[in-house]
Structure formats: structure tokens, C-alpha cells
Amino acid sequence: MKHISYGLKMNKIISVFMVKALVISMLSMTGCGKSVFGNSIESSTESEVHFDTVMTITLYGKDKLQLEDCIVKSFEEVDVLENVFSAQAKDSELYHINEAIAQGETTFQVSDEIEEVLSCAIDVNEKSDGALDVTIGNLINLWGIGTDHARVPQDEEIQSALEGTGCKYLSLDTDTNTLTVTSDKVQLNMGAIAKGYAADRIESLILSINPEIVGILDFGGNIITIGNKADGSNWNVGITDPLNSSNVYGGLSVSDLSIVTSGNYERYFEQNGVNYHHILDRNTGYPAENGVISATIIGKSSMECDAYSTAVFCLGLDRGMKLVNATEGIECILIDENGGYHLSNGMAKYNFQKK
Image (cartoon, rainbow, N blue to C red; front, top):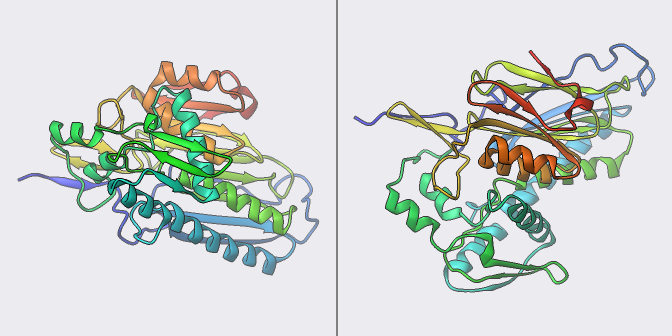
């Protein structure tokens, strides 16, 4: 009998206590040092399931009602974005685009949201030699990782799913938001980048309501630290140990930045004693196996960090590190299959410490 177990079944209720890609060490908000809010620090935190993952928003400020209202508005905005980017929801913009592509349509007037994410995805695809590829929706659907119908496909199925895919079949006019697709085999999937875009949008929304609010957005492996902690110090963010995801591998000190991790432990299934994770290598059609089991990217834009974390994971240690060191504004921590870590050239400023 074939034995299959699932690391995460996304279509079922998800507990907020499940393992996440990153662990945040909040510490005391008043800790050592004077609070920037004086003696009256209020806080509010809520978790909801969106984009097939648990999202938690924790905010600190002077007005608790305002913090609570910020969180309500934030999750309302996430709902709106999910209805743009979901590849499964039949009323989403992306779903309708994919349906039309399969029927032979080639030209689309897309929303600002789709345009912005696609523009970033195409750029990172080019810089990473195709390691990030948002056109392989057929391959992702074939594997079904994260669903209750995950399986290991036959080689011929994989080759068929990859046929006619690649960002070379996409052309995007950013002035007119016009997308042209020249292969009816393309199926767009924004799973490697949409959460990052959502996190950036929510940070902007919160700061537009009150620029003095600080806090943490934890969007299932996509972390944004808004400002500093209330006592003025940096946030302490821990990275999950990919060899034992109940433990923290190490920590770093950041403020006003995004930290995104892609790891082989986040979403997977096991079949006949072999784990198959969800980060697919478009060159092989199988889960990426290039010696890296966790790739954490640190930078200002969560969308870019999201895209690069997937690309670097797929590229492996040498090529992935070369890409990060050549890209302005991002740094990385890569953990290899033996549990060793590797830091990009500018990581010293984040004071990474292994536990």
C-alpha cells in the first residue's frame, strides 16, 4: 500500500500554532530603554487564514481602538488581494486570465496589482536565469502539493506540464497594463510572490492610517517589521531550523525591513519514505534539490524578498549567493542540507547569531 502523509493540508482549518517559516521573538515592548509611546503602550493582534496560510498582524501604538481598526481594514484588504491573485478561486482575476489563456486568448488588460507583481516576477526571472517562473501553474497543479490530492507524477506528465511554459511567452506593457501571452500552455501562478506583495500593501495601509504605529506582519513566512519596537530597539527575528522545524536555528536584529524564508519544510508530502516539498525546479519539474534547504532574504520590499527567496532556493548555494551579492538592497542567509549556514556579503549589519 502506498503511504502518503502531508506536511500541511491547506484546505483544512489551520491552527495559528503550526510551524511557520520564521519565528518572531517579540521580547518585552517596554524592555530596556524608554518607550517612544511614553507610558501608554497599547497593542492589538489578530490571526486569519488567507492565501492558504495563517497571517498574523500585531500592532503597537497609543490608541487601541485605532490599532484594532487598522487590523480589520488590513484583513479586508488582504481579502481583496486574494480575490486578485488566487489561482484556485473561480471569481479571481488570475483565474479568469488563466481560463482565457487556455482558450487561446492572448491579450489582457490587467489590474495594477497584477501588473506590479508580474513586472517584478519577470524581472527576477531574467536576473535568476529563469529560476523564478510564474508560468508553471500546470506543473504546480499536477503535483498538488499542499492539497489532499498531492502525488508524484510520471516523468511524461511532468514534461507535458512544462511544455510551452516560461516567461519568454509573456510580454508586459507597464504603461498600459497590457499583458500578451503567446503560449496557450501558460498558466500563471503567483504563489511565490503574491504574499510578499500583500504584505507590502498592508504595511503601506497601516502607515497611511498612522505613521507612528509599529509592529509585525507575519504572513506565513513573510515577515515585515514596521519601524522599531516600542522601546526604540530592533526587532529580534528567529529563523526556523529546517532540520527540526520545532526549533529556532538562529536570530537576527532588524527594523523596518522584510524577512522572507523559503524552506523545504514549509509545505510537503511524504510518499514511500521520501519527502516532496512545494518549491519546484522548472528545469527538472521536481522539487528543487540543489543543496539549499532554507533561503532567507532580507530587504525593504517583501514582494522582492519573496521572489528572490524562491529563486535563490532553486539556484542552490553558489549561484544563489552570487545572485544575492550582485543585487542591491537584499541580503541572505542560506542553510545547506548538512545544517551549515552561509551569509551574503552585507549580513554583518543584521548581527546574525546561530543558536
